[in-house]
Image 1 (tube, rainbow, N blue to C red):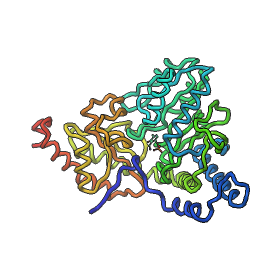
Image 2 (cartoon, protein in one colour; image 1 turned 90 degrees about the vertical axis):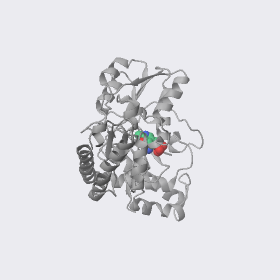
Image 3 (spheres, rainbow, N blue to C red; image 1 turned 60 degrees about the vertical axis):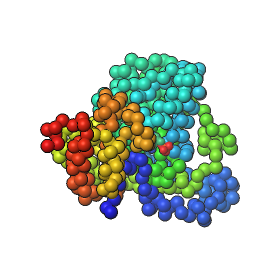
Image 4 (cartoon, rainbow, N blue to C red; image 1 turned 135 degrees about the vertical axis):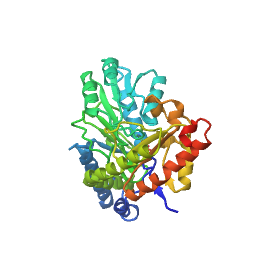
Length: 391
Ligand code: PMP
C-alpha cells in the first residue's frame, strides 16, 4: 500500500547524513568529554563542533551559550524554572500565552502552585499573541516572558522581536520555545531580543532525546539538575555524545538547505490548503494564512470528527494528526484550537498535516484525491450534517 507520511510535528525521520555522522561516536570515538586523554579530547572537540553549528543556526557567535539537554521538554523546564527561581529577588510574575506546548504550560502551572503568579496571554483568531495584553500585564515584578516562536499546531509565527522589546523594557527575560520553528524559518536570537531559546533535535531531522537550551550570557538563571557540573554546571550528566553530534549535523544541514526546502514545502503547503478548501464545502483553514510555518496545513471540516477522519485516511496509507500532535491520543479538544476561539466540535473536526523532506507533489495529489470523498462519506453518516451538503 502507498504510504504518505504527513505527521512530521509528531515525529521526523533521522536524516541519513545525520545518522552517518553519529555512527563513529557509538563504537569508535566513545570517550567522555570530561576526560583529559586522547579519547576525551576527541569527544570534547566533537561536542564543541556541534555547539558551533547550533550557534550558527540561531545567530550567536558565542557557542558557550549553547547547553545540550535531553529535548524540548527539558529545555523548557530548565529555562522557565531556572529564571523563576533565580530572580525571586526581583519578582514572582511570569507571562506566557494560552497556546504554548504542554511542557511550557505545565511548568508554569507547577510554578503557580509554588506561589508564582502566571498570566496567560490571549491570542487572536489566527493564534497571534495579543501584544496590547502583554503591555498591560507586564510589570516591574515580571521576571520572565515565555512565548513560542511558532505554534506547531496552527503554524502561526509570533512577533518575537516586538515581544522581546516589551519584556526587556521592564527588565524581564524572554524565553522562546523554538522547537516547531527551528529548521523551518530563520531564527536570530540577537536580532529578536531572545535571552533563552529551546530546541529539539528530532524536529530538525536529528535523533530523539537531544535538545538545546540557548542561554544568553548574563541571563540570571540557576541549574535545575545537580551533579557532575557538565555543560558549565547548568546541565549535569554525561553528555549524549552521538546524539549531540547528530543534532549538530542536523543544524548544519538545516542551515544550508532551509531556504530552498522551505520554499519547496511552502509550495506544497499552499497546494494542499487550496486544494482541500476548494474541493470540500464548509472547510476552513486554522491558523494564519501567511505568517505560517512552511510545513503546516491545519484545516477543519464541519460536522465530522477528526479522529474518524484520521482512521479513514490511515486505511488509505495517509498519516496525519488531529488536535495536539504530541498528545493526540487524548480525545480532549486541543487547548490551542480552543484558544483561537473554536468550539469543541470545530476543534474535533480539525486535521493537521505537517509536511517534510520526503513529501512531494504526488503525495499532495494523493491526499487531495481521497480526502473529499472521505469527508463526504463521514458527513453522510453524521446526524449533524445538513441534508443538502451530502446529496
Ligand atoms: N515544544 C514544542 C513546540 C513541541 O512541539 C515539542 C514536541 N516536539 C516540545 C516542546 C517538546 O519537545 P521534546 O519532545 O523534545 O521534549
